Image (cartoon, rainbow, N blue to C red; front, side, top):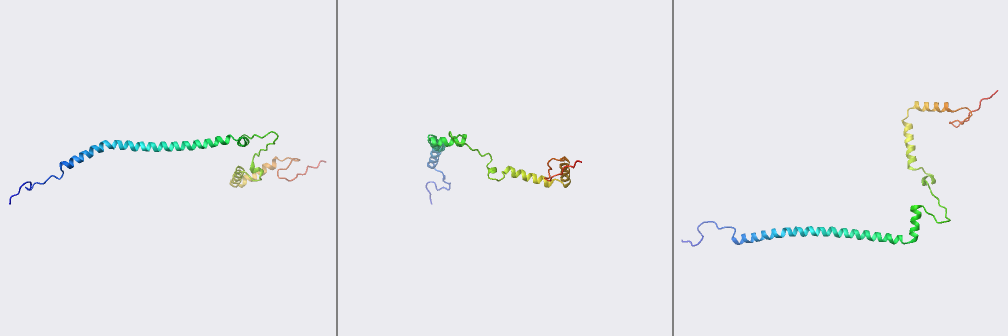
Length: 159
């Protein structure tokens, strides 16, 4: 048998010139378009950030306009002057509560904490120091003066 044309046992090329050309064209297209696509994505992100900043600025602007409208009301201005500055109208008597917890009869947090610290100090003090303190208090009282214990001391009889 006689074989004609290319059946001589040599392998045929797996990549043709046409496939190589298409690959090169795709590679060049990718090299040209990749930076453009990257720039486009970066611009989209910048646009998203700017839109968020614009939305935040318009929300702040709306809040400030609402606050400005409040300050245009004379009753609101008067209420703010009373609350913030303590102003009163002529003829009114201002009352200032210095410590609301004292007025209601309760102890403030600072007083409760001070009492707890004092109780802890007393509990940590040895018994002999308590005795010594009572001896010192007893030695400081003089006849005729008020007794720190609350008992009355009879005056010495002269005579």
